[in-house]
Amino acid sequence: MNGKKTYRKMGKSMNENRKFRNHISVVLEQTAGVLAAIAVLVVTQLLEHLDEILKADLSFLTEKGALIVPGVILLLAAAVIAQVLVWRKTYISIEDNAVVIEKGSVNKQKNTIGIRNISNINLEQNLIEMLFGTCKVKLDTNSRSTADSTDVKIVLKKADALWFRQEVARRIEAAGGRPGLRKPENEAGSGQDCAEEQRGAVRPAEDGEEYDVRADLGDVLRHGIFSISAVSVVIFILALAGTMFSMVETVRNADLLGTAAAGIAVAALIALSSLWDTVKDFVRYYDFRAKRREDKIHIQYGFFKKVEYTIPVDKIQALKIRQSMVARIGRRYMAEIINVGMGDDQEEKHSFLILYCTENELRRQLRLLLPEYADTPDIRTERMPAAVWAAWSIPFGIFVACTFAAAAAAAFMIPEKYIRFLWPGAAAVLVLTILCMLLRYRTAGTGADRRILKTAGGYFGRQYLCVPFRNIQYVEFSSNPAARANGISRGTMHLLASSADAAQGIPYSGREKEEMIKERMLVF
Image 1: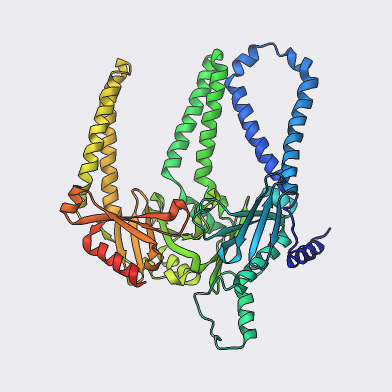
Image 2: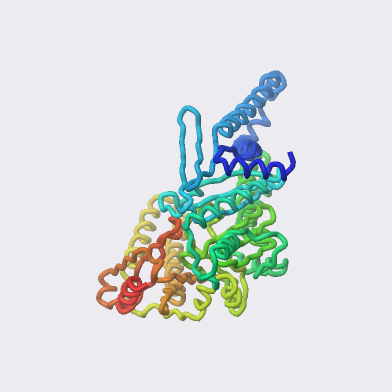
């Protein structure tokens, strides 16, 4: 069945509210994940007991091979059959005002998502899906109860996925669930003109269309360099050193082959993980492109995993401007957004908007993609008052007491030859803590204009958070006795977002800023 015929069939079934299933390739994708987890577990166990296995009599493998191989095949077949049964009993349908997901045969589950509550309709395509020509549609809603998981994931042929996204977006607009932030110029025009504008507002960006921002290979490479985490680099170096040390010990002492092999495998995995954490941004944002159309932002990027986001501007709750330690030295900035529905899956923890660039380029791209926040780089943050050191003295004093108490207790439990390292180690922890407090004092601060509250935080790197006062759900302020005596307090503002982004801190500031925040929340 060719793509065109499939597309017509999907469209027909949708229009008649018929049920349909995920593409059958979802069975292979889910089974592959299970098999990979089992393989990792088996290999880890084999490496841990490698010395015992090599010394053992393995003749039983040839004797029992006729049973082992069919057993493995049966387990694999059982896993595939289980996934097929789940696939066969999972149905999706789109109705006038809802997307409905039905699962199970004995214990049936029916998940109904109101069209008005859908906040994002995003597309994703991993390597397996590229091979089969399929695409994953991900629906997120405004609900706080499902804020930490994508509400619906549907795997369809790419043409059908594009149609599904288009149809759901059209029904959202028809239901009036997403009013635009900007009034169309021909607001007083005919009903036909308004209908044409609505269709344009939900039309997804096409491959041949011009984008407002498009990154070339050099932009992506520069972003990868400025994204490098100093912590990941240190972990990689330590893990690599551990791997080399284990290999040397293995060569010196053959009796430690099994234990050393397990240590080498673990150290190598840590090294590879930290290496990937260091270089992942070089490939993650390959062919990054973004476009603002009416009240939506369309973003595409990816090499091994291609993603396509359609982000309604009225669902954006805040803007993050980040600087890693390397970027802070090089005076480069990147931008992310916090919006309703996204940021729940692990791969969506950073809802990306602008690659690392200079401050002038950041302003230019914000004017193109998110003009509602274009003035945020001009909002200056004021450093925390010096009285914050008095407020920090109480928790720091408690930390010092706990550190030395722990060191004193450890002195009775560790060998005497290590005691000489104990107290210098405790002192080093306290010195590092003081250094972090100093970096925090120099980095953190608060600023505001008429519409937006801007906070700054960080230690070696820096992060700015820009939140319109109207998007703050509620705010809490607290102060310890030393802070109260000096007339300062710190706060926590709560946003409509996933749990990772819902609560955002407000650094210590004077009471006048606390009152200002409360007043402007009520006005806007």
